[in-house]
Image (tube, rainbow, N blue to C red; front, side, top):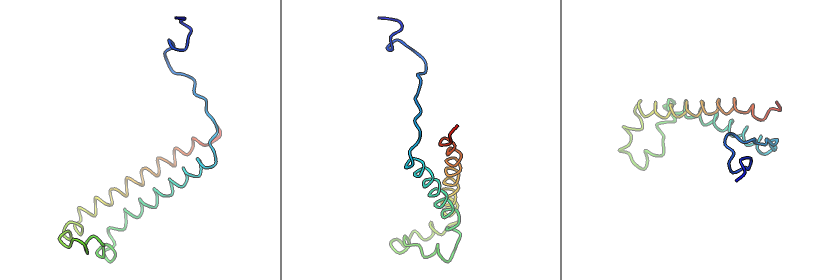
Length: 101
C-alpha cells in the first residue's frame, strides 16, 4: 500500500463548507422562535391560577388534582420552560453559523 493513499491517512480531513440555503436559515430562525414561545409559555402558565386550575387532565383524572396543583409540579413545568429558553438562546448564538465570515 502506498503511504500517501487516502486509506492510510490519519487526522482530520478537509470539510467543504457550502452556503446555507434559504430554507435552512428559515428553519433555524423558526426553531428559535418556537423554543422562545414554548419556554415563555411553560415558564409563566403554571402560575396563572385561573387558567391552570382548568387543566383538562383534571377532568379525566380528578385524583391527579393534588399533584398537578402542587407547587413542586408547577416548578418542574417552569423548569422545562427555563430549559427551552436556554435552548433558544443557544440556538440564537449558533445562528452565527449562517453569517458570511
